[in-house]
Length: 431
Image (cartoon, rainbow, N blue to C red; front, top):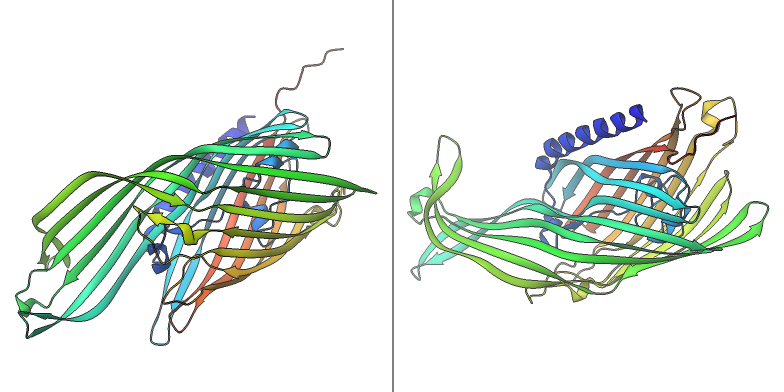
């Protein structure tokens, strides 16, 4: 167990450091809306299949999307995922690029009995990172026209810490994730003026902290078709939930510092804190079907939808709409039981998705489209007597959303999942 645990914490440290260094480079204007850019909840295995996850489950992979899948766990598994990539924003007049990277998930799954599993973990729910400047001509004192730059900035994110359990009865499984949502998001607007205008620049900043419980329910059904062939059905989701929040607001005037090329606080105009309120987190539901042949192939289809039109932030509406996504994908193993030929035991994955994003701008839908390829690489055990079963799963995605009439985002994302598994609670045997 020493190598498995040491490797796990090593990977965790590298992941956190990578995330800290990479996330500062990101700039996604879409993260301004709702609670921020919604993080993908699938693990590296499911992302390689285009996000197909509702009906998926196996002995080693931890599928957070549908907690009913925990009933299939047979190994104690540390599962850590990281992702990174780049995004390109383009319109008819301009374009820009930025890199990003962060920790995707951190989970510990364990079987409690042959058909009862437990999962403990933490993952990002949303992320906010944007810096956008918009020019505007404003009129002062009735006749004075001044060229103004409105700079919109945001950063922060929301996380989920959770515990989940799934239990099976024959071919039927039921599961639940419960946990706590926490984090904070800072949004600010600067009004900047030319130095010769003698108009004092200003900033209006809001910092909102979130803290509330959440849940997700899941069901799965496995139907045996014979000859190791199985048909799996899955559904999961949550009803509309109310999240508690607390907000502080700072309004201040600014002064430009030439040496640092930054704006510093000149005077505080108004500060308020402790403004408590609620957010309406939307109802979400997903369903899927998958056909699988043991140790050979799996192919499936998922449909997921969320009622983002009901989202409210302190009672206010936002530029959000009902979203949906259709995913199709599968995986294939040439020969999982092969004693020779490493590539015969590698799992190859392919998938794609399309749908409608939760952001709606100027009355226009934001369509989404993407495809992915992936692979699962088994890692040989250090010693034949050890009970370790380690996998490195990789998924590469190419996707886009929006349109060039407003703003089109094209992204490339690589997700790596390190699944470090072992058999625990084995009884010692003596002759």
